[in-house]
Length: 629
Image (cartoon, rainbow, N blue to C red):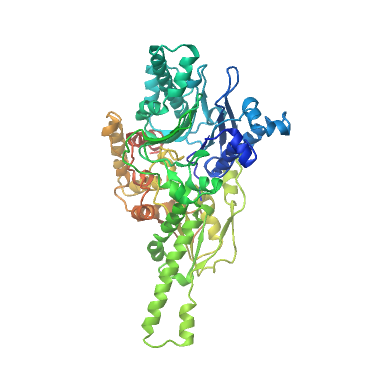
């Protein structure tokens, strides 16, 4: 019900044949550019704030541009950047545009490497200067670098200190830009190493340049740069001399998939995107494993290497619950499993009265979990019917069979998103009034005062939309009871690896735990946790522990859920409301290979995450709690 800003999306292509090949086989040398467009559009769910693309022309002559970039802001950024690229071709006639050799020599964006990025800001920083790809220019072709990624580093300060200690002076303090400068510095060192080798061999002038470009190794660059990175990332890049690479973090937090044939190597954030764009089967797509890099050298040689050994591998479970496209074979199955896992908790919430219970979902991203939930209840009801027939003790009559078999699980589309709340409406009361009308209800879908209404969502994080809109509009149907179901567990902790969840006070579960401590006369624990978090800041990161877990320790999940209901119930709503959350165990059973659950459990996979959660509590205590208590 609440949209989360989340991980960015990446797409990368390396054409492995000359442009003339694609012109002859596919009727256009723009094959790579067109495929990049599709890869980006199919990942539009991952970027609503901006998009960018970059291209490398590998055989340009001195004095000719060979690195191209286009970026734009807004939800229509993909269309805008590709329209701008196409506008660059207006001054050429159809014969010139159909000539791959001419295009390669004369036209912009006619190259062998294409890289695309979709941006979702998770740092609060916005503007075109923060839209990827980033570029670092140099007169030596091998020292040019274009970089983009899906990542948040938790230790930007450490990387910043590392590069400034070496004499660099970054112009922007952001993880992407600082990573660009750090990788660029290591690329410079690699180039200089090869320069010294070439000179020692007696090479001179262009022979030195050719030697550097033929022998430069981006994996050496990554091996020296990446060990300092703490966080979740998939970073993509290419050099001006034609080296291309993609690397995934050693914890496997952020996803990346790839495919190669004799025509192309492609990398993207999501598997079904590659399948759809290239017409492939699921098993033809490979996952880039934690700590691996896939690279292509200037000569087209592909390499798959382990840059950093895997560390406490825990891929992000929110990718499976919410962010990634549900058309992925495994994600679809997992989301259905999440819905099935909730059966017993929902049965308890409706007092096992399925005859008078209507099931539905809000928003559309919860639809697959909804189907899984229905499957579980249909199976349960079928078993109940068998038991009822067996309990008769005789051959059932027609009326008895009809009575038993006519029992069914009732599902309805009870809410439809009707309007989009425009960002230009900023005044608080106006936004709240309009928020109450974002969804419209289907009147008559519930028998008033008789039916329970069970509505499943993929996550309940802040609770704002529940309070300002959802509970109130569902109450218009006058159900006997409203049961709000989350297919994911309670979000209790900030995320620092890509999702827009960084402040403790954002989470309704955290606010509920704080209120329970106050209610039960345990406010002293809040002060104690604050002091412990401050002490943690004096320790090396590797020795830090998550002290915020103690805030939740006195309470069960049900305690916190009941307090949430009390806090979220709008004034005037008297219908009984219950919130049912997925359990951590249920999450792990549904998504057994994606055990990254730090936002639920507080078990951060990297030292930087542990440091930042303690710091977040300190910030909350000093800026909010101490002022109000």
